[in-house]
Length: 68
Image (tube, rainbow, N blue to C red; front, side):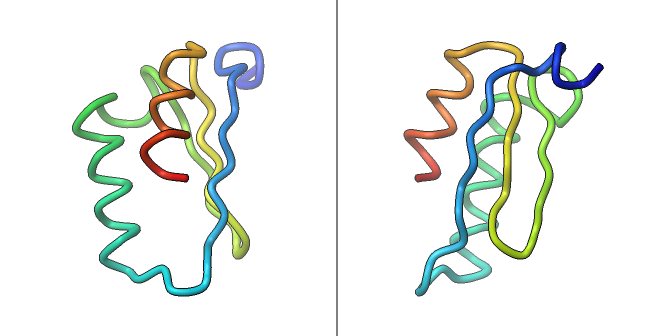
């Protein structure tokens, strides 16, 4: 059901040189601009990436531009 509600997906891979601070800033930007998870987006973290799924294509583009 979640896939139907949040159909637009952006996968942001962990990169060499990424720091805890850089990821904190990316996640803070998403929260500041899209609110807390559940309303406009959800996310899932793995060892390889963080995947954001959004309700709108526009929000997915914002995340891709900021976090990629």
